[in-house]
Length: 239
Image (cartoon, rainbow, N blue to C red; front, top):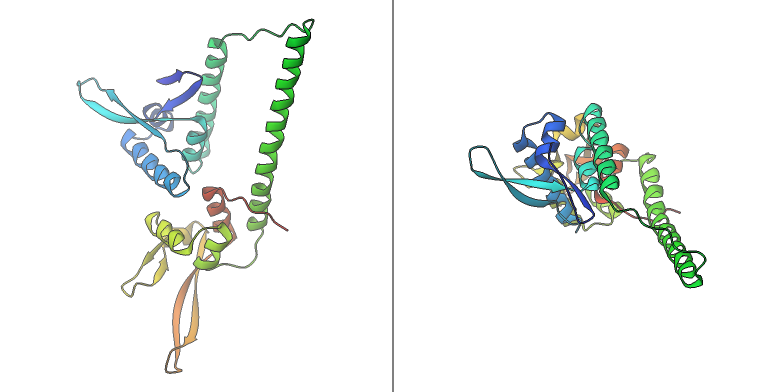
């Protein structure tokens, strides 16, 4: 198995990931391409790409994923796959910790070194508190959305996620959440209904001639809202 540990940055190759997941490498590459498309929408760093030389002497592309990117990718995979990935990351981190130099403790009898050590500890504590403060509203938002009762249409969903409606619709079409029919009307993709993320309801309205018309409207239900909130990493303050 190939694992790259370089300059304090641990990564896992897409080839190793394919082996752990028992998937074809080309399928993992496709999944990472989709993940990078989502990262681009969210303005997050993409998974890095590199090349490797196969036994036939040809050069092929591969990706190098951080632990966070790996978790983003395999969240939707089966439980046994997630377990194998988690165990492999534990091995990588253990290897990294053994290969890292041991940091000597400061000389606390030296007032200057002791003061510097306390200052570093205080700074680390402040950073941890700031990160917790950032993460808490996100957790609250996810809890709030997951317990939502009413379904939301595309415009209200985009508003809830803090995304421009046109940009959200474009993302949904690109990622098989919705599509436009022959009349250029947004419709729900059937797989999202099967996943329990969306529903489609019949609605009536009056046209310009005051005639009653019937149509359908795709709606995002609580489970789908929670999934989208996780994808877009929203941070909302919930009253």
